[in-house]
Length: 386
Picture (spheres, rainbow, N blue to C red):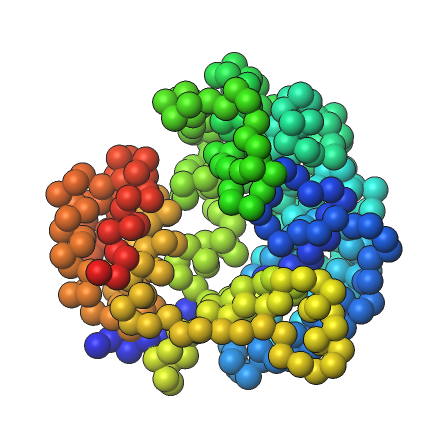
């Protein structure tokens, strides 16, 4: 078997609070009802990181991502304190990408130039739509004018690297409405756009009571194809199923996920993945989801999560779940060194996927076809353990 070589390392930091829970959201987010326990949570994140440090001694951190919830509820000085605590314990690579998710409706919580001076060098705005009726249906706390204002404020503060999240297949959305959303987004000159399908996730309000007038599968595919074409016309390259970037502006943090890289996950409900070259193990870690329980356990010194090994039998699917989202696909050599498995572990299933017209191989690079991307769930499920 090939030796497992630890890949690049990233850090995910989860801020679990939001102003209001959106009906489509299945993330570990909790409505802010009182003043946020900022000091206590920063200490908990520090203690959490201390527990994980022995797994990554000597390794450099290549990217950081503040996700949520709504990380922009934390003021710039709190974000700076978190980053300082991380830098004191981890070796950050030069020019490490540091992203923070922002809700346009919370732009008043901190001046963007202060987030920039704190070390956050990339922002990701959850806009979702520029149609105010759609935004109300989605339960967003901002309107389209506030979205544009927030992005322009960030640019005026000096931000060059900005992502905008857009959804399609929204309730009542037609082809003209979807075109308008993409054109409004492009007009704001972001470097990156995430364009993804609204889905009815389990344990959400929308799953229990789906909104009316959802586009059917064929209509949703037409919306996606139109978005892909429009974004390509404006110089955005599709490098992942839902991710489009100007040349050289791909999200380094998410690329590390999709290339089966390693990442520490700290915060309530955070997840991580760590590889060990010495033991050949791949470990997936998780942290307690409820913020109150998470804070209490860190105070008392109790363990704040759990972990499980990714067995060799499960590694092909675990790998493909990420790598097959990429337009570039993956190199067989990368599969081998990041899973510790030989090509023979996936050869039969690769052959089947090629026969179906889902994957192609060129000089050891496995590349999803357009058909493969359309039926990505079927392609990935091929690699489930028999």
